[in-house]
Image (cartoon, rainbow, N blue to C red; front, side, top):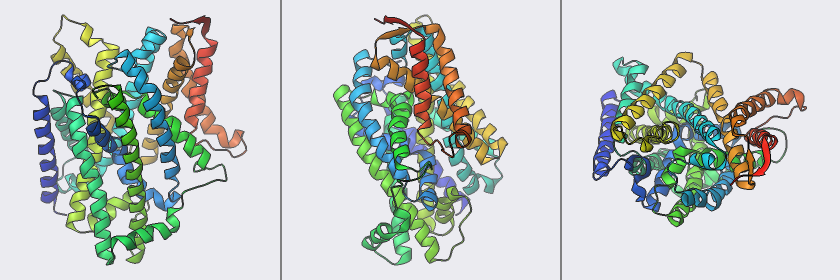
Length: 482
């Protein structure tokens, strides 16, 4: 593809985002950045959340992973559906009842200041690493597709991207993101649909034949019932449930969007319809994966060794200009729908949880918030550059996995708070939140040796949360909290 064409696509896309930012920033006040004035239509939030939840990791990795584990990933998505039901029925009513801006304010009410700061700090660390990892994967693809052709170094392209994201989110924050996420979801799903259509045209078959290929393919096998592998159904299904609760229901990035809905009932409708759309979207990505491998096999194409490179390789080199353009739009949308909401959530959590900005009436609220927003933009930029300097995808993936361990304490804290009324020794909570992921990491690292070949999958999160829960139980005062 022509680098100038790629530039035109990306520039046009950002022009749309900036236009949306301008329109949504009209009639904004100091709380609009955090809550969107609780005026977001639930159906808009639901559709926009699909793009943010899929992310660049899903866009690139899920189709390629079909070649390794078939459709086993769908077992995890099935668990996600149950997790979203718990979020809608348990967490959303709680957060709306307490009228929270940051969901970690609950921890202060339930346990105390130390627990509150522990929860917020866990989120800030995890989200910074997670958002950086997701954007790093997408930025690598864009670097190869465009920036390398002009001799633009990786750090310069990432810095430009981060500045552009800051520009369209700095004023109205979550209110803007609710609308930009909707646009990004459209482009992301459109990229998949058009790619499938292009594959059918290249193979000379209609949609019915494409469905038959997917249905009859050995790569469409879903369930894994036996063995201690991470693809075992019970592991993936349980992992899907609790990872969804921890990394969506207890994540300010995701819940901040839900809390922009007009009321609890609309937020619950948002979660219900979002979960259905999310499930269907993953089916679409998995079906695309089967078709990509079928196309390569039918045309005798030698595929790259890394499965993450399958979709980019075929889209940019074999499917023609239209497919290449929509792929770039899709990967750009997937990357920025994750990064923009992450930056807004990080800024919100720091402003509300760490410095209590709305409570400081003697300073310029908007100016201070914008400086904090700039700070997190620069922090994510530095983290992405650090990942690139490591130059080892397995090491970067390990860092991302380690960040996931920190959601265990959040799950344990909220589970303990919701299942009993015991008070805990607040000063011990930070130590418990440090100890539980450390012990979980040791268990995960040595599981095969210690447990006769057993390997933890997503369910390590449950172990992590259980250690936190037990630690809180042991630190309880033997009395009930107010």
